[in-house]
Length: 415
Image (cartoon, rainbow, N blue to C red):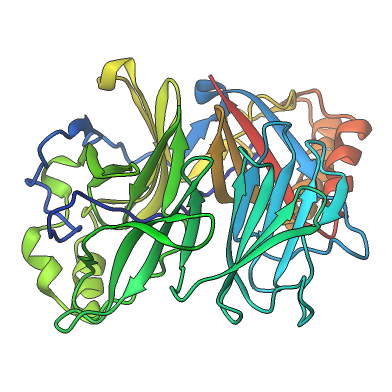
């Protein structure tokens, strides 16, 4: 019998992008490298299912989000991290915004869902403003930006005629916005704006088009690194930096011969998806983050892969796989074939200050705990297997995670 080891994290990353002040289509073919882009070569992705955490992370920490009457959370749409390490969690489906400290303890709700003056009816997106220490909420029903302090009190409200799909804070006076935008020939398009804190448009960029008849979600398109606000659209190989006065091409992801062919972008949604399904080696990026020493992406090639590219000035090693093996937890279970125990996991949330944040459902720890108990029993009865570090305390630690009602946040510190 083969025993597999600990923890896999299946990463799904959605993000979207932008460009320059010229009218452009934001989906580019593999051969089209925009002027000013630095090429990042990730064409050498191997068909590997597992990445060892010790290869890319220095630490892995499990943080159960405390479950109280006021803080029951379903699926996390967005997570923002404050400079103090607090986590602002947005559950869009249930219209809940909750603040937890770095250890997962409940601190307070950010506003309330309702029809009172200080409440939001249908929150679409949030952004944390580190300059003013506020949480900004876009209420699509009230057509208003609501500003809450870190303790959840409403401090300002500004109406806006624009429909804002997603928000991110650019600086102390500016908010970046991406929204759906209709033009005559391309009804499913998006547009970028720079807006002041009063909801007034400061800068408007030309629209960009999606694939014919696509209506893509405009959520999760922004990411930050060293003061830069980066933008990336799903299927595109190009990453842009959004500034107050421009959209600047920054990086181009090269997948070699496996990038999406240019003519596919003229297909309707049904044909486009069929082509992706038939051509299993076709590769594209669904989400992009930059960290100090590496790029963190999710790459789709038949499966979703977590792909981490060491920078070493862009010629670094590529680590790719659709499972993460947590070999940093101290538990070792190895059979004759060197099998590893995997636990399916997580949704990616953000990368902040060199830490990757993931979401894990507690039920997954229940399965893992049951496996650990069986392995411990087998090890005690069969001497041909070697096991180190499995004791009742380890099992109880994961058992407690499985009993949590709220999601588990997994913090992985990049090397």
